[in-house]
Length: 219
Image 1 (cartoon, rainbow, N blue to C red):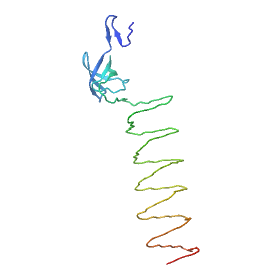
Image 2 (image 1 turned 180 degrees about the vertical axis):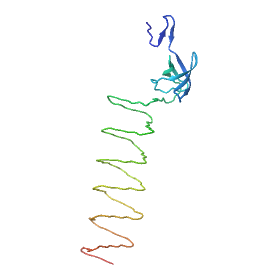
Image 3 (image 1 turned 120 degrees about the vertical axis):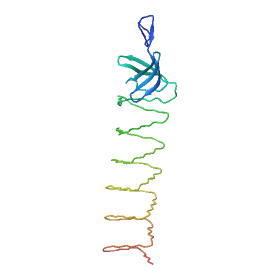
Image 4 (image 1 turned 180 degrees about the horizontal axis):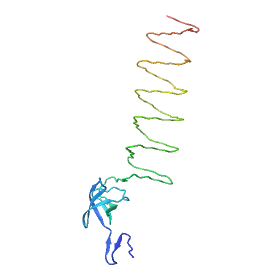
């Protein structure tokens, strides 16, 4: 019985190592590689279980079968480059417990189609974020936010609500052109001084105009 798991023997006196080779080139169009071996240069397919994508110069483990030669694993990489996992027909990851992705560098998610996130609780914590969306539709039952500074720019903005309330310590609003308000009833309450200054002021009413005060100055 052979005691070494990576040795195969035709007889007990001539052990044979499992064949290896060095990748000369990667043919990405058909998932094959040209590999230099002890037998010469072979064309080897990338096995489905070999999810780590081979690169030129990699030392790989080979398996010779009736269907051809396959790269089943990567053994060594001399280049200091990032490794890439390749799944030709997609992949699904299931975990009965937690699943964590951690990176000491950048973390990027990219999709050519649709990206969905479904979770009962979704938290995002970032020191700085940038969001760019061409079209968004949001349905939120309850939203509460705290902002130290909020700034937004829009070419067109529309707000619709059954009830809308705003509270500010101080407010400064600048309208360059027209400011139009339409309301069934308009009630304005000012605790101290209300000042209206304009080049022209027009007040029209279909019925009564009432001005009430302790002193009324005109002119």
